[in-house]
Length: 201
Figure (cartoon, rainbow, N blue to C red):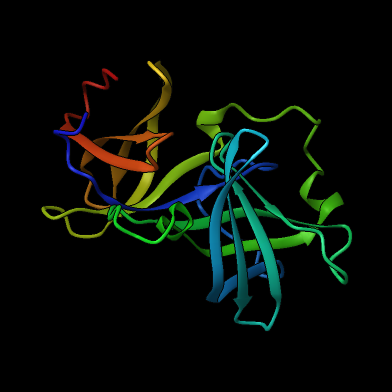
């Protein structure tokens, strides 16, 4: 797998509501002005990352990311009772030599909304792992920033001690690429460009 190039990725994480075409409800949308602090630690046998972020509307929020479950959540705090986050847009950096794993996953945007609104179409069953995250925009040394317009196929594979999430994406230039996210490495890799007629992953 290491022979395939690492790529920078903007990915969308969703827990409660699916995002077929990326969009954010403006009344709930929050853009991150800065990440004040972040760190990672093992909690209950699971690697988690913790962030304190300041939004452009002035909110100071604590967020948590569960690497194993691909779930972002709002850490409870006074004034935000009954609130939840969803549709989290995250920059996943390809560079590994950073102070912590949390520094590779930078939240850019999310929805902050009442929990009852977030769970309006949620029956309590967690979505499959492959549906909790999807590519939004990516770039590599050979590919300029490419916007993902559609995801014709996706599936997950259990490989040794980790999981690999496979996506075939259609970009804004009508090109198709096979992309893979390696769960325990936080790596997005570009496998190959594929012909539209042969979605074989």
